Image 1 (cartoon, rainbow, N blue to C red):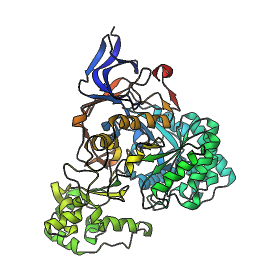
Image 2: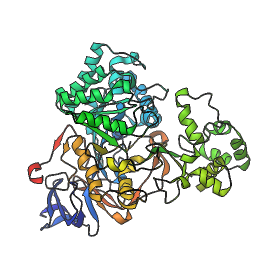
Image 3: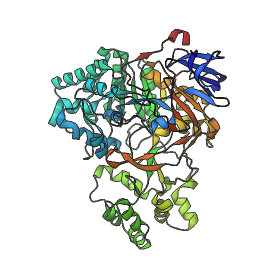
Image 4: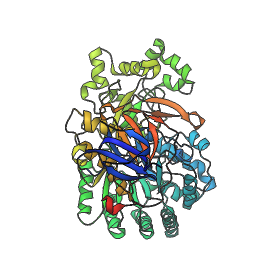
Length: 584
């Protein structure tokens, strides 16, 4: 019998600790890393990693695969980008607990907040659960290419307890709060890794109503946090507008000190946040200096929109001529859009805001008129674009108006052109502000939103972007080391959620690995697919450079192609490495 199941030979190992890389072998047996260094013996399978990087599988802690994970074993697009562990149920949205009469309500909440087609969710999910523990059981029945873990989502909990009383501004009674806390405690004891909520006006149901957590009091949130404390583990995750009167950092700090549990929040430059990002970071650090454990989740590029005719947003979506054809089949739409007479009529029109919710007119005005912040996504697109790449300046150089340039761009490639609009994290026209945060232990790389915003972004590619842009190619400002990047996307994210069995290339840890041709790593061009249930659309993006992705010792992807292997499962609660002391 072979000594090992798999040996990855001669790779340059970046082990996730942040220490310098080294050349060596990685041996795998029974799903675990058995040896690292010079490995003697044979194996049932060997991978020649000479000249390649060998790193842990990426641990992505901010995704929204809550519905997709119940029907999709491949778990794309995150799995295409070297991710071997996802944590979902973020931002207070999810599908458990779920009373039978609230299924559609939960779908519409998810569709509005995360832009996941409701028709796909309605067709794809079987709803063979009601309680949160039953949802975990349903997740556990299906093998996948990656491991999945989840939060208990605030929106579902509130809907379950309040029923028809759950409206914006609803004030739960003390008994309601006790029931919500009990649900969260049961969910965490059953295996949830935490609880999530959202308190931002940018998150709305499909009907335009703010999500349940937006109007929750700190007393409600603290009682729910205490429930996790009673269960003995869990992360309190939140997206918030950071209004000063809410004192978010004050109550998060108090809760963290009382329970000993971490709180984490989406840290962004955002038009919706009252507190600027530097003030958020300062307030977090003041609490941490006083014994709290608050961690900022940061995105590594501008959080924005990839616009296309077939996407959910583009600069002309409120032009009367476009609205008149918006519901036609794509081939009929395309014929109109490519007609010069139709183009002339549309460009002469003003956008019609009369039917638009007043709270989002400002956002749509940016989309429709912010030509200096919209950029052409060409083949070698730089996600940190300079001003001279804007549609405004490119149109001027060509001697046409920006709207005409944008129209022609969207019509390129048979109507499949793309425009990039960074709404958040790009206030300065660069990403310099992220350099220091990527070297801070109170921040983790996150906010990929994998599985969400199907018609507008594909930030599930964030780990690939990190390698390509921040480690290798960045031309403006500083870069980060490969060792630091791997640590931040593997060990740091895993440890925040108590997943101490992964994120390192060391004996006793899960054999979750990526073999990477670092020189070849590159984001592919995005495209729109209609492959969700009920023909639902999603924006997808692949990558070059991943030679192999290995989950629990099994090769799941070779050269970007799924092997159909499904070694991934459900994570229930914190995890420990099999040989933690020896590995450390």
